[in-house]
Image (cartoon, rainbow, N blue to C red; front, side):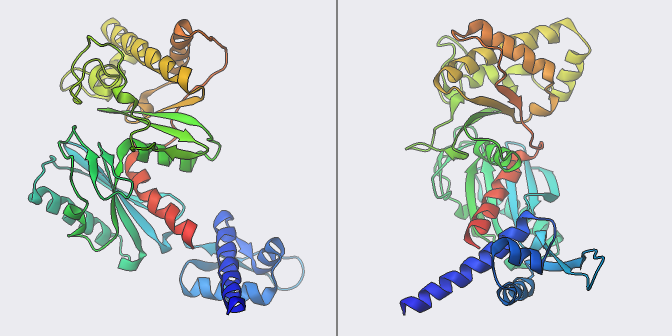
Length: 374
């Protein structure tokens, strides 16, 4: 009995190893797989047939050869499984379809005002279902639907534990899952953005990720993983007190980093980021002054966090596409004016993820689980 279990484990290991090797390479021949994994050709052949039958891989042409028969090339089928990410904001939702390589191959944005009402949840669910139907894929290809929201969530993604921005504390994922026949989970939006950054950048070990959007969010990355803490709110630097006599934050306290370093703190009512940065880059003094004050507050906040966590900082969120290296240089200078430990070493960087990093991250989590389990 033990021998049979061990044999099954070996078969699963071979299957997994062959799939992951093809995943990590654009194309491989049967012989290359056998050589790299030190497996027999019959074993490789058997697993390739199975993977091809399950449509996880496919034959993709042949390799050039100066002698003998040309070897068949095997490649990944990126859309053999897909995951859906949904970013929920107050007035919009963004839906992204992500393949096994973490690539967004379809996305859409819809104007829809958030409401804690069944009609809203049903409308969002219907939009997600219409989106999935447009992909022309089978139901079993969909790994899950991740809902990224401006709120803290339970570890299992089933509940909103703190959601004052949208007044959604206590919300259960069933408001969506009852309308969708796929695994569904809630995710904290800033953690989703950090997840996308980790996917893109394989070199991140420890870092602080700041998602600077309409609202501020943060994530602590330790050993390449997002650190949640005992109660799930590690990284919520947006509620770090910067000015005890400052403006009222949505959390009910005053002078939080949110009130000074979010896009809402930077822009005037009905002003867009695009317009602000157009004016700023044109050298209009009033906009340059507002930007300078914003960077002062951001530098103060980053210095405080950096004194506790002496690691690199990544600036993401809606503001990141507008940032330049000159902005980062100026921010470094402002931090070093304040810190007790000035240095010439750079530690602040602009995010490399796309503007839809939040919805992408909500989808990538299901991709990661699939790859870990196969």
